[in-house]
Length: 181
Image 1: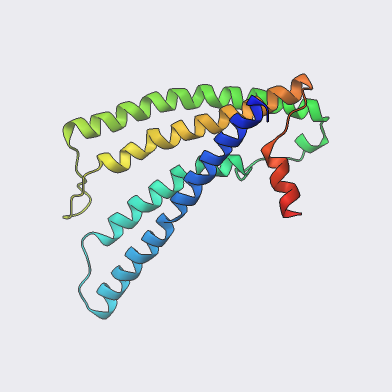
Image 2: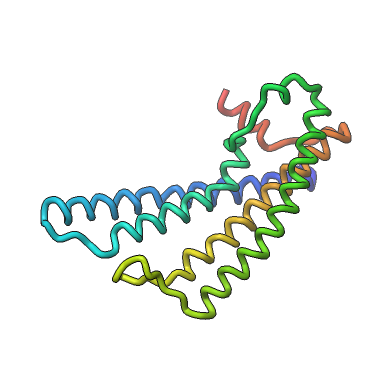
């Protein structure tokens, strides 16, 4: 196995693992909302924390799923013209898009780190409810998720560069496609 294939396999595996681990937050959201509904409408004792906790779980779920979604081509994309282009022109378009994406995400990453650090340094708490949970843990997921998305973008950039250059490589995605067929 070549170093490129090994790198792509490790990066894709990381994105898959994070996506599967993050998907468990869905059960947390369901559990919190179910408890809140029972407490509010059956026991007539609503919680002060249910809505806010489910919102935090959903925010973490949404942003942490980005690298998994990119790895599986799940982001919204307009393929009407793209699919009509020759293979290497498609690869060049991908190369440009992922290079620009990494640059934008790098700026966003820097801002997210500052945002999370500031929250941690002042011991920020929410003022949306009387529960007042600390906000730095949820804000810390932002730079983590952006970092993971940058890593997956880098893997996609490598794939696109190899396709533009006409270099043959073993893409781990091809192995998955043949296993599911």
